[in-house]
Image (cartoon, rainbow, N blue to C red; front, side, top):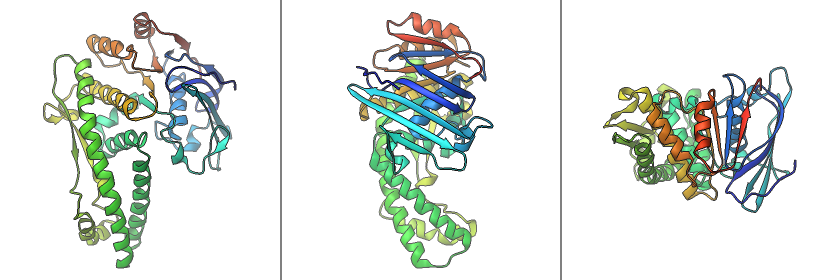
Length: 367
């Protein structure tokens, strides 16, 4: 693939896809600013965005296992893309084969650990699948916060990975009925030490993120609905290790670790009530889009590059005023490269009509 240098922040110039979901084979070049994909449902628009997401996070946005993204009845899948960040060119390769480990390469050099790649290609995706962020359990909101922080704070990602490994070890011992208190004490110390670091960084994130989130919500919804995000966590500080240790007997009965930062939640509130309980479809969708645009803004400020923005079918269930506000927002110069999908060209044409930027329009049919 021939790479072209771009003067924009992080952008993808070209992508080559082979056997990814319903996409058999394609090679595409993109506009450095706006890329609009339209077509009927099930044609492959979302799959193209998921390929871009996969090349950033080494996993699917829809949480599919690696073998599930390989096209039906095929043995392997390949994604290859050329990115540019100013004068820096990055070639990213991903190869997956059934019953084999996946391979990720940066400029033809294979990664030893997939975590080394996280943050290199900053991406923010808004998708109908993200509704669980509002209506789902606490794990969905933790994942949102963890992914946001991990894209600019490598130390956070390292500590989080270590915490989860220790947690798996402890849970395995609990399920097996292990009685080695010295081993449990060692694991409890590690969980407490990692948990304190994670808790402090999450607190700092919410404090800095909340004003940005509120700003975007107000811009999309001009009637001043009060929105809030509250970090709900078990106490973490000097007593963290004792808190984990004191739950050990209960945990042995349960078969899992019941205390720790893996139980944290980030409550999304509308006028002091959980938005998932009191919000309309339009308010929930507005909250979701505001979260993701705030994430974009946050990463642009914290990270080394302006993220690539992926907007998948975002206009559904929104009134005309909110659609108009979103269109005005994404047309601003602070947004870099954007990909938008829709089944209807109406909104796409409105976006393009209001812009003085370069763009490309793609019709997607049968992958």
